[in-house]
Image (cartoon, rainbow, N blue to C red; front, side, top):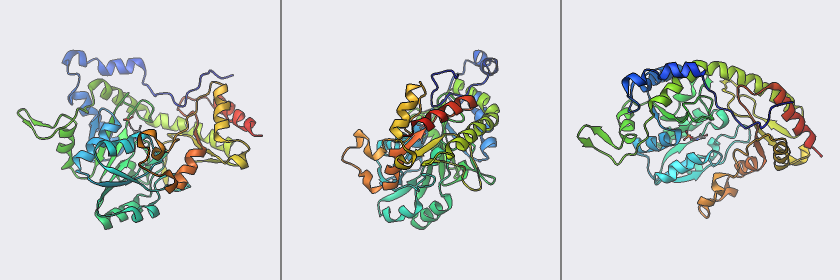
Length: 370
Ligand SMILES: *Cc1c(COP(=O)(O)O)cnc(C)c1O
């Protein structure tokens, strides 16, 4: 029998000795933050791993997205998806922008390019799509629309660390991509984030916005915030990056066990990797078609919780149904997203999850059916 509770995720950590060896030099330098040697090393390690020319690190993914918006001078309306974590929409609203929600595709839950163009008007300045669950958006169609209408594209790639299309990294699409290195993500720096971008001229702007708008010892050019990654977080990233490929390989085995078991049940839809994409196996979203499956998503959720197994309803409710946005959006205008949000459950998924635990979770799910 398995060890419970089983949480939806479990953070990856290096061996204690590996981390303490990495941070030992901080006791000599006393340099704890403000872009020190660990920060510099993580920048170069990540450039190599992600295969991108430009990357700027942040204290977390959310601040990275807010700073990218500021640095790129995005204004007015932004076309985005309601099927994501609160951060994506909150970043837009907190920066004074108006989110305009396009519906998602029923197969991989990423923004539907066919729904974007009809929402564009004179005030639209950007598209902020999300590679949700690590599923890549239709990047070519989105780039085509952006090109024709002169819009910027900033990807929320928080779920897509390590995902590739052929030899193109998920970090290489659009004008910029935001990553989250939060403890629960495939690659973590405890808390952390990054922006990868095409135009090297963005570098000094991102540096300015993440450090109070300071551009020189005696010059402050913008009302910036504080979003710098500290040395302990960077050291955690240096260590975790050494093992991330092994972690992804272990995740693959867990995902495949889930998929094989769950696909055998009627009315259950899992998210297999997209054609031509190297996935990162970040999440295990499952959609339950109540009538066909014989139980609702909420019944499956309750049955697992009884066994001290903690899945999450990611992403329910839809952002457009959040209390804080009451009266501002209409979720019935994105019916596909609403339908998925009402039926989806994200199951426990991490590198060290025992296959015996996966089997137990799948047995409980199979038994819920009426
Ligand atoms: C985790 C996450 C974020 C925010 O990242 P933090 O590092 O937690 O600030 C943004 N968007 C999505 C889709 C996420 O999952």
